[in-house]
Length: 149
Image 1 (cartoon, rainbow, N blue to C red):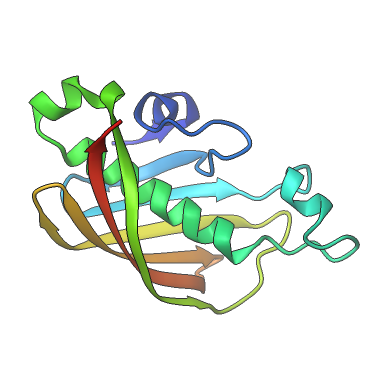
Image 2 (image 1 turned 180 degrees about the vertical axis):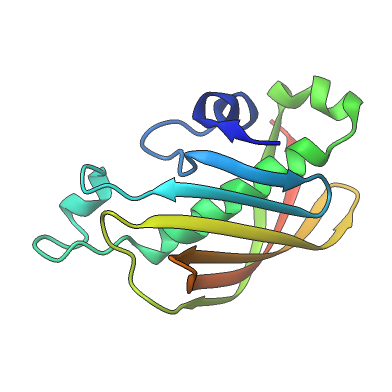
């Protein structure tokens, strides 16, 4: 199952310039998601990070991983919960063991790979990794919860 950016916008409340997923490549509900974001020099963040030496901020990589995790959580929800998706949002609870291995620059394609460590009720514990050309660039453990808006 894949989702393009229009379909992602039906799932997540994020919009430009803060929607950080371009496509979901594959998803196994309750277990795994793989998605990507194409990093472009035209993104507003590069106006200040850093002029004449553009580096995509680590915090944006973590947010992209979290958005992919949000798609996974919403798509894994029960039919009843999915009917009420417009009234739900995914909140971060924690970010642990975050590491940034290599810089990400304009022209790179960030591949987000998220595996479920544990899922209980509305709480999701995720192992999140970001790659560029099969090289690990960032990783973290994320916890999130689906809540009412």
